[in-house]
Image (cartoon, rainbow, N blue to C red):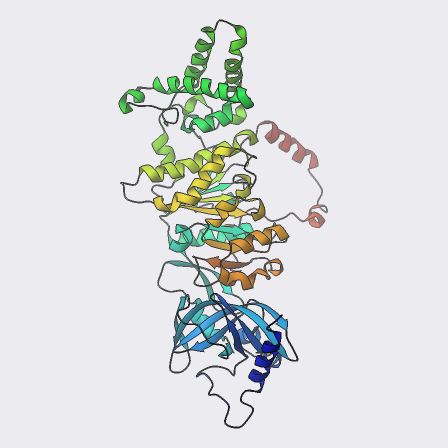
Length: 559
């Protein structure tokens, strides 16, 4: 509070500046009369004072951008040399009389033409204003220059708020090259918005390579005819593609010291089973992680043989545990999509081809619906698919590059903040993709309604953050920490965003923007709409048939 008297004096002098004849400074060419002045400068932001009366006058202006002048989340500009500096209003508070004190974050600068227009806007600031510099409102014409997409490959997703016709664009290479996250509470239109983004990417790059993990079976309806759809009926995921860690998660039921002993036994038996394949001779050194087919019957026989070599029955307990679990996996029809005797042939190349859309043939996306996968192995299935993406990228480095986008819905399930919860194999591979994926051409798209439950290290690796409305305060705090400085002014608006509105910040946009998503065609929307209780409860008839058909599907696991 020590600077309060000096602040009051400075504001008073600014307010009286120019009232005497001949003292009025020339206005910046092409600008509306100023709405305030710069008070204090810091490296990333500034304090400015604004005239509340002037802001009220502009609130009825025909230009929607000028109507927003001075409000939190709006932009202001300052003339510095031959440039216009653009800043975002972060906070506002009344100071004295009709004076408003505001904090602003600098976003970038553009060239100031002779007629006052702005052109060639770029992120970052090379020259800062000095205290006393005029602060002007930003017009729609200015915003068009700021938000106009350049020649880089991009997709348009909606309308920039508060304008009526300026399009919001996401740059494909920066967004995918450094990963992205879509955050939003349930009911905000998140699934539809993700579908719109992916459809736009598919339209721009029909020969792309996208794989999406869909835990609720929502997205299959959105991409019929635009990609390949996989579920437990046609996924046919070979069990032998699992590495040793994934084998342990599926086949070991013990814990503590017993688990380590069981793991040693499984490693020995699994290595011998893989070694029985003729490929083992072709490739020489084989490890427990090598994706070489083996027979489940071979693994079972090896375990039985090892049990027979033991002198005491008590020593056979670990072997019996593994054998019992293996028998369960082979006999339970729920696991037939993965543990089937039909999956022993070498289908690895064909499997990678169809999952990664190589070639895409105009259908660049694979939707993997894991809603029908038994919960005991869901994390392992996701782990295998994600690891296949990463390992393929590593081992294909000497080939023509085919970058792959892996989109993970409900990401907090697989990379939880609590490091002791859930399966660890999927957590480790997704964390590795987040840290190293861009080196090998693997992009990660994370979608979650609970960013506070997501591992911090993973979210911090996302260069582009698309935040929809978040109702939970903890989630808001996480987004606040992850967003770049220039986006801080938008943060207070996150709880107040309407459905299908998003704040986009980071590498994929020129500057942080608030966008209203386009309306997606009905046939491209996911099956994620909430049922209407009021309407559904009015309908009657065929209840017996509904029950009978449901029970049949229930018992037949969807068939």
